[in-house]
Image 1 (cartoon, helix red, strand yellow):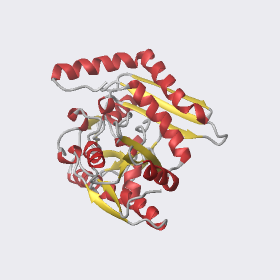
Image 2 (image 1 turned 180 degrees about the horizontal axis):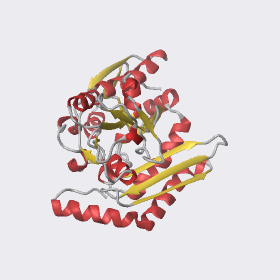
Image 3 (image 1 turned 90 degrees about the horizontal axis):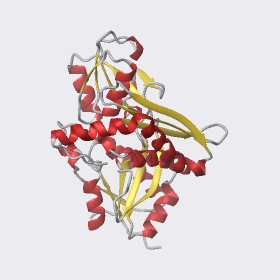
Length: 322
C-alpha cells in the first residue's frame, strides 16, 4: 500500500475547521502516520459579509480544497460534511464519513434575555445565517423578526452580545466542538427545525487517483452508521436540488430496532409553507428512501417553492444551481 509520508491534510483556517482537522490528525497519528496541516482559504471565508445563499455556489467552502487535492498540493481534506456538495466533483472521492456530533440546532440567547426559545416575546429578533433556519423558525413563529449574520462561531456570538437581538441560532455541533456549550440555552428538536443535511458529521475527501489512501482513510476514520444515515440525507438533497438556496432539511438516524428513520422538509423562504414527512426503512435502502421522500415532498408542493425561488433568483440576476 502506497501512502504518502508525511500526509498533508488540507483544511480551512477557522478555529472550528482546525479543531475538526486535528481530530482526524490525531487518529491517523495514533496509527503511525505522520500528518501535517495545510490551511486553504475558500471563497466562503473571503465573503464574510455576503449570505451564502447569495454567493450561489454549493461548493463555496470546498472548491479551493478540491483544487488543492487535484493539483497535488494536499493529500486529503477534512470538511464539515454539510459543506460538501451532494454530488462530489469529478476526480474527488469522499473516502470517509467521520464521527457525528449532535446534529441539531441550538438557541443561543442574548445575555440580557433570561428565557428559553419558547419564551421569546412577540416580534422578538433572532439572528441566523441560514435560509433553512430562517424558514423553519418562521413557520413555527411567524411573528419573529429574523436578521442575517455571518462569521465564525465565536465572532457570531460576539456580534450577538453587542447587538439588540434577543437570540441567535447556531449548530449544536460547532458549539460543542469549540467548548462553547455554556452558550446553549436550548437544543431545538426536529419538530421545530429539521437539521441541515450532514450537519455535525465530518467528511474526509481525497483524490480519486489515490485508492490506497482512500482505503486507508476509510479503514481508520469511517463510521458506518453515520455514513448510512448521511447517505440517505444527501440522496434527499441531491434529488431536490437547489443547494444552499433552498430551505430544506433532512435528518436520518438508526433507531433502537436498527431501522433507518429519515425526517425531511422543504420550506418556503418566508416560512409560510412547509412540506415535511418522516419515514423508515432497512438501512440498506436509505438512499432509495431519500430519493422517494424528496420526490413526494416535491410533488406535495415543494416543486412550486423551487420554481418560485428559481424565478426570484433569475429576476435578481443570480445563478441558481438546480
